[in-house]
Image (cartoon, rainbow over all chains, first blue to last red; front, side, top):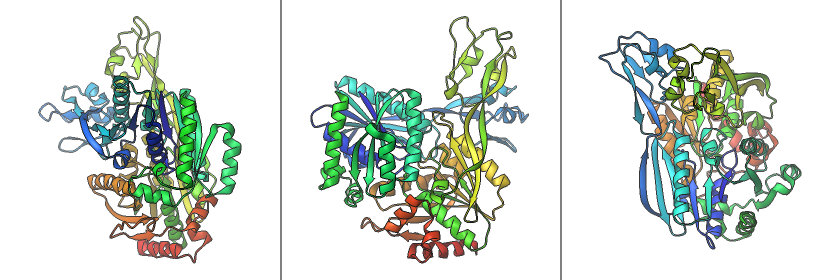
Amino acid sequence: MRIVVLSGKGGTGKSCVVSSLAVELSKRRKLVLVDADADCPNQHIIFPGRDVRKERIYASKIAVVDRNKCKLCGECLKACQFGALATGERIEVDELRCEGCGACVLACPNGAVRLAPKLSGEMIVRETERFPLVYGRLLPGESGSGRIVHEARRIGDEIAEERDAELVLVDAPAGIGCPVIAAVAGCEYAIGVLEPTPAGMANLERALQVLEHFGIQYSVVMNKVGISRENERKAVRKFGKKLIAKIPYDEGIPRLLANGVPPVLGEGKAAESFRRLAGKVKAIIR
Amino acid sequence: MIIGVTGGKGGTGKTVVAVNLAVAIAKTGRRVTYLDCDADCPSAHIVMGAERREKRRVTSFIPHFNSGKCRKCGKCVKVCELNALYQLPGKIPTLLEPICNGCRACVLACPHDAIREAEKTVGWTYKTEKYGVELFSGELKPSEPLSEKIVDAVKIRGLGEGRGEIFIIDTSAGAHCQVVRALEGCDRAIAVTEPTLFGIHDLEVIESVLRKLRIGYDLIVNRSTISKRRVKHALMQIPYDKKMIECYVDGVPIVERYPGNPISKDFSKLAEKMVR
C-alpha cells in the first residue's frame, strides 16, 4: 500500500508526521520512505545513513541553436509559448524558461534548432537504520521537479517490490501543483496534515480537492492543536470522522526537529499522540 | 522597486513577513502593490483578512482536432514532449488535458491544418485592497499542474495595473520553476528562514536560486528564539511571540493590531529604511 502525506500549505508539519509514522510503522513491518519534496528534501536530514545509489535525472530537454545554420529569421521566437528565446547577435535560450517542448525545432526553416537532454537533478537511495529512504534533489530553479518526484516514486515502488515491503510512505511537497500531483498519483491512501489556522484550512482543502480529483481516499490529522480553539472546532465540524488524530502544539517539537529527531521519539503528549496516530494508520493499512 | 519575498522551506513565515512589511510601507505614505505569487496555496488575502475581488480566468491553449481535416497521421502525437496526446490505431488523437502545457508543438507539426485553438481554465487572478495595500493574487485550479502560468498572469496583471511605487512579490515554498518565475525581474529579495536544520538547509537551496538569477538578497529570521542556532547578518530577527500566532489566526497583520509590539516597531523601521 502506498500512503502519501500532504497539506497544501507549507510548514504544517508534514515531515514531522511522516518521520514519526515511518519510525513507528517500521517496527513491525517493512516499509520504504519516499521524500517527494525534491525542491527542499528534509527526511535525509532526520534519517542518516549510507547513500547506496545515485542517479542523475535528465527530466527535461532544452533547445540548442546551431549558430552556423541559424539565419536569425525569428520563426522560433514566434513559436515559443514560454518566452524562453531572445534574439540579438544570436538566438539566446533562457535555460530556466525553456520547457523543452520542441516548438522552436518545428518552426525553424533551417534545421538549426535541436533538443538536448537537460540535467534536472538527482535521485538517491539511502539505507538508514530502519528502512530504505528514496529522495530526489532538484537542481535549484529547474523545472523538472514533477519528473524527479515521479522517478523517486517509481524507484520507491521498485524497492518495495524487491524487498517485499508492504508499505510505501510518501512525503509530498508543499503546494498542489505539478510535483504534488506526481507525489499523489498512484497512491492508495492519503493523510492530510491540517494546521488549524485559516490559511492552513483553506490550503488543505485545495490539496483535498486534488485527491478527490484522483479518487484517493484520505484522513486528516490536526497538528499544532492548541493554537486556535475556534479553528479547531471548525475543523472538527468540517472533517468529522475523517479527522483521525490531534497532535498537540508542543514547543519541544521544533527543538527535536531542529536536532533531527523524529518527534515520536521525544517525550510528552505530542510523542504519545504520534504513537496513537500510528495505531490508527495501522488499522487503515489492514 | 520590486522586492521578492521567498525562503525555500514552507511555513517559515514568508507571507506574514511580506504582508507586515507591505502594510508598514503603506503607513509611511508610499504606494505599495502586493503580488501573491503562491499560486498553489495563496494566503496573503487570508493573512490580511481581505476579500478577493475582480476575479479573472487564466487559460492555456489546448488542441482541438478537426475531424474533417485530420488524416490520423500521428505527427502531433510524436512531437508532444509531454506525452499529452495518444492515438489508437486509425483514430483521431486524444488529449490528456491536464498534462498539456500549451506549447503548440502539435499545431506546428500538423501537415493538414487540422488542429484548432481551444483553451482550458488553469486558474484565476484577483485584485483587492486592504490597509492601503493593493493586492493581486493568483489561484491554481486544483488538479492542474501549471502553477507557473498563474504566476505569470499575476505578474502581468499586477505589474501592469498596479499603481505601487514599491512592489512586493510573495513566492511559494520550494525552489522550482514557479518560484523562479515569481523572482524574475525582482530588484532585490528577502529570504525568510527559521533557525532549524530544515530552515537552514532549504535556505541554502533558495540562496543558490537567487545567485543563479543574480538577485541580491537579505535574510529575515523568523521564530529566531526557538533554537540556539544563530543565523548571522540578518536584516531582522523576529522572536517567537504568541501575538504573531494570534494575528495570523485572526487574519490581522501585527503592525495593525499591535503597533507598539517590538516586532511591529522593527517592521516599521525596516519599511522606513526601504523607502528612503
